[in-house]
Length: 451
Image 1 (cartoon, rainbow, N blue to C red):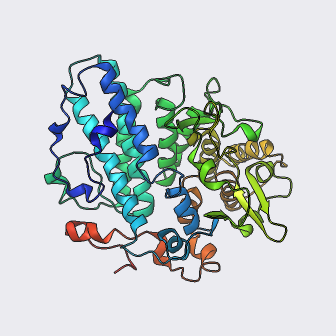
Image 2: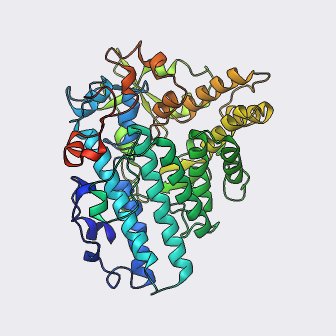
Image 3: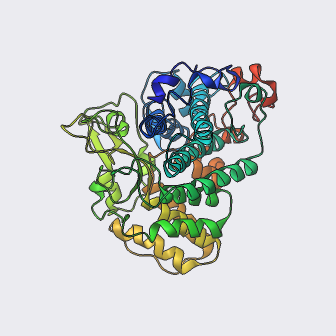
């Protein structure tokens, strides 16, 4: 419901839109349990369909996979994604503008819901808390991705356009503090259980999963270890799928948060975009050099990568999601958060804390599932590099993880300089969209290297 109502919000210049919040009144949307729930759950549909955060043809997983070392580009030369692949991204790039505008529009919708819920006395307080916690989670998730690709950003907590039109960018560490504050509040508001029968809405463990990532990225390894452990230890709800072909199915017990397709019978964006039956690819394919680092008997390489050949050439496509076409009932949902990442987060946090045996245990849990030998007696430095390698093999083609890891480990120069002829160290951040800087000079200065 809310998406239809909010369709009138322009995708252009969200931070400067004069949009009176009372166009969606408490009486109309937040008057009872059913309409309020529909409004907030539609934020997940907004995340799935109207932002660039998902793994579809214009999503962050594709764009940043091309930007890093995951994908080769086979699309039309000179298009925005080609510029990502060749590191020719300018402040005028329409993909960059789409990342910024669509994500801030989602944040606006979250803020609108939060404000209405804060003022609502029409229905049950437990439901109000649940819905507000979900909106806070989605707002945090959206800001998190903006932070990773743009660096300093505005953290938007209001729908007041007079405030938003002159907002300034703030330091990355302060953004992390806002993210953590929002998620801590959300965790207090949410229950242990999913609000519906599926894993498509936030509960406390969804919050802990994102919190653990944010703590890790911001260098708080104690809390990263604590939050990831709370999810891993909940074996009643979560466990690794021993059959890797089941990892990305709708029924996966490894899934922590999924995006349900819009209509019954539809499956994931990833399956429809990545898979192809004959070469050459229309869009992207995995770099062959990316696959060379897999151990020969790694089951992830066998089950999650598909080879397509024309007899002369061979291409490789992500095959985590198996279904390209509709089925009688939906069998694959896009997975936003999953248990394997929590093991990787805990392993990395433990390594930084000097808890090397516990870190090795977490890595070996994933390696055993992948049919690989367990590792022993690694130094802290070697263990951290092994964790990076395991992340490369476990999380490829998912939500920009590879790019974020190269950035976090300060390895982008080392990895990309030899394979990207136009690579520069300043490409570690994307440019702020030029139109945003023109409309709101307070967003200046532009990120280094783009003036």
